[in-house]
Length: 361
Image (cartoon, rainbow, N blue to C red; front, side, top):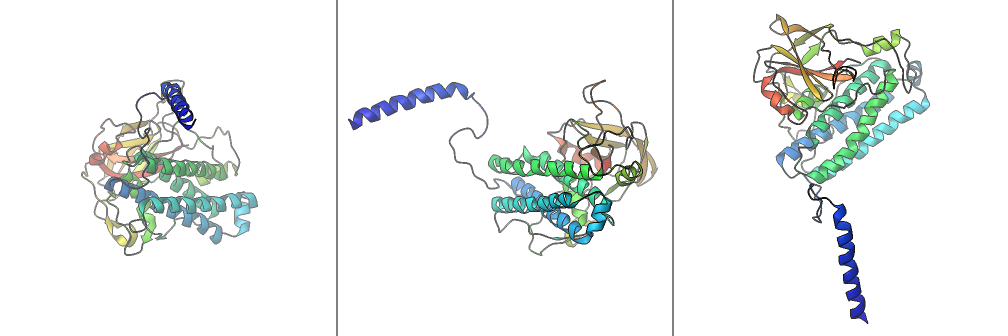
């Protein structure tokens, strides 16, 4: 009797497998029965995941810091009520979970530890604006390396964290009175671009903290970047789900003024990182936005300053959507090589300074 049952089960299993198999097209990564390994599988993984962990730590500190620094009256004056402040607190709690997940993946011996930070804001509105920028470079930095990780299982977990962070970035735009998502695609940047933006706000770390092997490019400043805080205040745009305003923050063709530093400056935690670049021959400005890296010519006004014009163009041609919108990334380069979202590191040898963040819309 038992033999008959086992034989019948075997026939059912084979038949069931045959029925299922046509619905699993061949190919793909990690689709077999091999158990997933949620650990860094290369130095590339280790340094990338630790960079993401630094990002989670600064957000955790930043969200709590603002809630503690500014009184309720100032949040209320900026249009944020008790429910809004609770959402901000909840976003800080999300960072606790993200940091825990990354620490578990990396392992306690090599995972970065929380550091001390300095921030450039004085008001609630400026605080919200800085949060928008921090979460923007955070999501872009992870999107840029996610598909390159050797550990695909780790990439899947990190994807679930960074898509949460993308929602945070949208919320901060709404808190500021900006349109929630004025783009069709959310761009990525490289780890070195990410670290260049993040490191200057880290003042010190534990002495045994993991040292990241990413480039710190010289700092770039857009001296006449549109001031989202001032513009929203002038137009009485307060925190809301959305605002459909005809007042643009910027427009194609307007002159952009840039200044940048020479390489060799000590930056980051305890000044243990030094800015570097392979070239100082500034000729172009690269605009990383959505699916495109667009170049505009740079007119030098000194060895470390110049002007260019904000590019126009639309993603898929006339009648689609502007290529440059939202918060985009701007760099000074010595050439205009063709790069795509998957191989942005090919731009590294040509970077003179940057990126800087540019609030185009």
